[in-house]
Image (cartoon, rainbow, N blue to C red; front, side, top):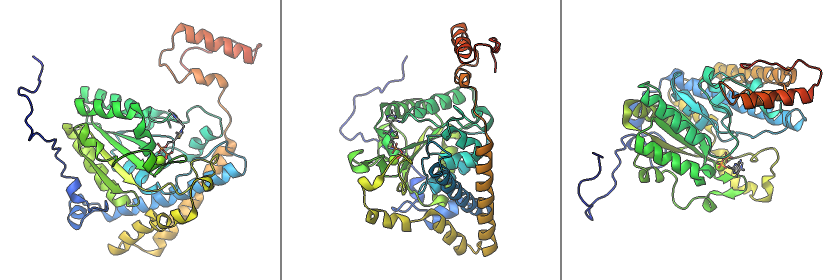
Length: 376
Ligand SMILES: Cc1ncc(C[n+]2csc(CCOP(=O)(O)OP(=O)(O)O)c2C)c(N)n1
Ligand SMILES: [Mg+2]
């Protein structure tokens, strides 16, 4: 028999979602002193968070430079997203999966994907520049929100296979207006899928501000789907790391999904095709520029006595070297054959698709041999 509620509700029925993680945070979304103790993040990890944020910011700037120099078709800057992306991705185990959205460049860096390869997508050379299975990192998804049901379905599969895997899914606050998000949240809640939903609330969806996007708070919506959530200061990598690690443990334990809302601000344009001066003022940005995730992590390291200038210089030179190598890899990359668009859809492509691909190849190069095999 179905497991349904056996009695009609009383007026006293309230939705209570157990949420011990939230108790470790201040109202501003940083760790309380007890929270920091409970999280037990080592100095070495905090230094890693700092180093990776410095690298990410430098590579992001290089992406912008490359686009301005005509080497990339498009770039979506990540300034202001460093703490959320590095903190959350570093908190996941290597065996966990990440389903990113198009701006999750920092998460890809954490996963060890060659940034020069990542940029080939933005140069129009590749349809996807990495093997998702190898890195346990899905493709960057441009249609807003579509990766969210993918992540939930994948997570549910892991649960049914009794794997100890948690799934992190990244998206912006604009994506929370999509049906995909609500359907995925509901499905995850009902079936207790091991998913950590990470909303990077940068307060803009291109030119649409947060107050025209969402009534109320995004984090509060988790309770409506029967699972907990917390709003974190999006400039605090330490807090994001700690909360994500606990949320992923919660998911892996079989306790179901968790929603993290990282509140920050998109300091750059939406992409290099956007001119934000048409819809916001520089004055609005000033307090968010001062709320800098890298400076915050440096302060936290100083407070722990785990900071020194040599470390900072090493991070900067690593970032510069990686930016130069990213540029070299990108410039040296050659385009995939246009027919590669057919290769990434099916593990075992149907005959109709193979025929379509062969006709396409023949049309592009009538003299070339037509049989390209099935599994390339
Ligand atoms: C389904 C769909 N609708 C519209 C767009 C156009 N579009 C691209 S990005 C974007 C805004 C998304 O904002 P948000 O989710 O907050 O992420 P952010 O870009 O701020 O990181 C829109 C509307 C799209 N790519 N896909
Ligand atoms: Mg946004």
